[in-house]
Image 1: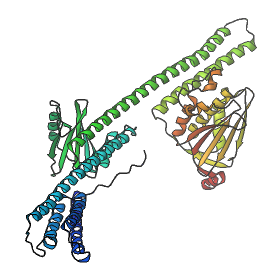
Image 2: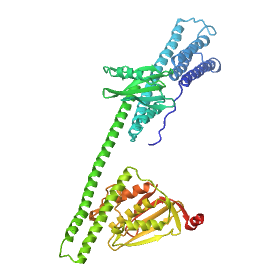
Image 3: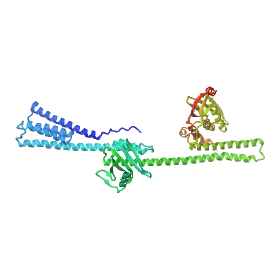
Image 4: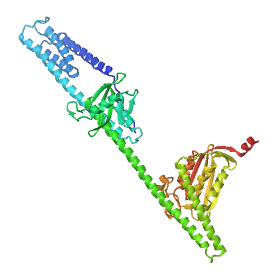
Length: 525
């Protein structure tokens, strides 16, 4: 998810002080403007026409009424009223008004200023309400976007609580969901809300009553306000999916309108339902993949069991034939032996995969030479490498490494079998051993057609045989998955890549401690 920019939340005490300070500043500016205008007209410019002066005062009052509150505008108009009377209406210099028409002028000035300030206040209130509605919609939209970007179901409800608190500047938000073992509470904020279960039960019962809509408050029924044991005032808002309440949303912090609370609760309920649907879909996907895997594995095993068992049965029947020569009989015996080795290897793969799945493999490290690992792996994979040449480049022949030789050689044997299976008969399989400061790497390169680009993401999955496996008559697709599982038991890894000169290279990397053979012998002496 991207970074979310949220407007800072101003404390309510500061928010109350700011308008008062602004009002005082406008009042002082208005009074100063009236005083300057009075001085300019009576002394500097020498304007004596009451109409011009009254219109000038009215202009100042209208400006003040436009930018400030009604009481500031009235105070400014009162100041203008007094100055106009004292300095410009005859008799000048006294508070007495001789002409009744001047009374009309004075009160007209006062009335116009009051009406203008009232109209200005109404316009500014409507503009403020429109801005608040716009900000409310923007926050709800941002909250919805945060929820849609949340795809991880683990802890998703807690994330939603944090999103609500952050978007609306709330100190604490708690999503309360009823469950078999009681209320599940997902908190956000520095201090979790300690709400008594009885209060939650009562609020949920009230939410289950007849659903009614309050058009003035823009809310549905079920809202309540409670106090926790430590005196914290908390608003409880029902979470509804349709008309069915599924929980409660507890809010603490700055005041949020009831209609906005209802909208937040609606979005939160949709988020909870979406989280549950995502989890159900994920579980269904796991079940579907498991069924597909079992089906593919069963089909592969049935095929790979049927082929050697058929060969063994035919060879065993042929041994009873009297017409076989000694050489033919030895050939049939060799078929039985090789197919039994294949069956043994197949059952061993099944056992290894079961141990990997149950995490029943433990690494037992000891000091060995890398060449011993390669030799043991070649012996295990000998049936699959019978028609291939093995070329070993050991670049760490004078070193000893500390690892589990059984797991490493078994993993390497699967790579050799894979190379023998996908390489042309008579080709060379190259094994390269390299040793860095803390890792032993053994690379196996075959001379086959390489790995198809679409197969790279699935090479080490169970029962995956790849595009080129269609031309192979044997193989369960478990070899590379077993390799990865065996290496994982000793914190190793395996990866594959196509060789620039053709074929594929599979490399295993095992974290090791390495020492020279001379150092080991010196310690033993």
